[in-house]
Length: 351
Length: 232
Image 1 (cartoon, chains in turn orange, red):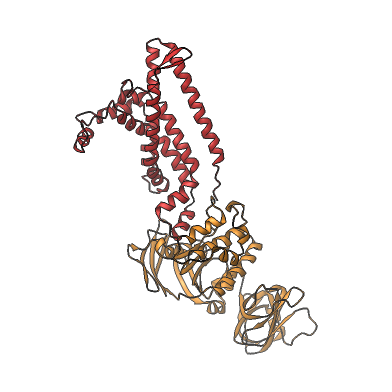
Image 2: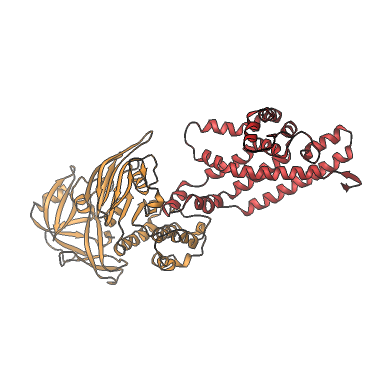
């Protein structure tokens, strides 16, 4: 468990968390707008904010009690900063060596470099690396310091869209392959939905609520939906990696439904994220349409949004799915709760 | 005695000048680093006060600084008493080599602290934070992160402190006096020669200083180009 009680008072900002208890497994997202205090909380956990007061306990180690505060050197946390924070005057190898030489456990530097796919850049100086490579080196460096908790401070926010798409699956892979608790600061709902097991919603220096990802995604007014609208995540297993035409076939957990998505890069579990506005509804399964994904679903709730749109909360097997349709379609199809319908999703809309 | 262009030159002031300047530079680098680091990372409103204090020798006439140092180092003063208490034979600093170095350290302080401070301000806090989370102690933070990233600042600080000490006159005259072979520095020797209408000696010494200063600056700027470290 990670038990947090902390206050930090600055001139124009106060972070006040009377009690926050997080399991020390899986990925916990700290989600909020800029100024919500999410990065500050992360820095407090790393021991980098000297003015913070309170009590922090990680498993059986007391990290802070009042003014008694364990320095970052003694906490065994790995931190991945927004821009990587690599040492610009060293090569990639020297950066990695800096972490490894001070770590309590020995690891093979090249092994970790291969795993992070930067082994071909080991002797490159840092300034010539691309943004994505810098972040991979930062991750490798953090792993080589043998942390017991990995703290990620908006690791994708400084990257362009294409590079984000490359690093995000890599983080998913890490999450699956390492048995390492992670705390992930972000303001991007897509990153939360792809990576997080639970979400801490922060606002103006306070904790709004702590929810599992499923809970956070099941309420219509979730803060995750404020910018891009409602979205859903379906858990699936990769069935056929290369199903031709650049597609992969997945099997939805708890059902025998197939789901076609743009090709993914690894077997095993996969989270399919879709926007509610990309999900349509049919009363029968269309035989002659271009839509590849047709899922049998039950309408659980109908939530009017405005004069034009409604949000349908659907149940597919044990999983939840939002569909956003027009008031007109709702009327024409005479949709009601507990009705059996088909959720129609373009494969293109799934990433 | 040296014979240059048929002129007889006493080399002692040159050696005195070089050893005072080198010692002062070394002392300034050692005490300048913690001062500059504190100032660079200071956010309190008292920062301006300390900055002004450090910069004071820039505007103060050297004779004023020298006068205060002369007064505070007088044989019956607190400094002398303390030195005697600590085992120094007479506690006398004025008109000695050590006195010259003390005076020069005060006089050249801003020339060492300011370049260091500006260099330290450029070292991103995130790099230090990252190093700490990787269990780096203060020594390795300094030697492996801060120093390599502020090499130019160190080079500039050392050069300016050295050059400024070589060229000083007022403080030296007040604190060091003009004892041949002990505290007579080149700038004062030149002044003496001119006073005694020995223009040939003054010419040769001045030319030596000119060539030496130019050579030092040239090599420093050359190094500076080589040390160009990109941060970020």
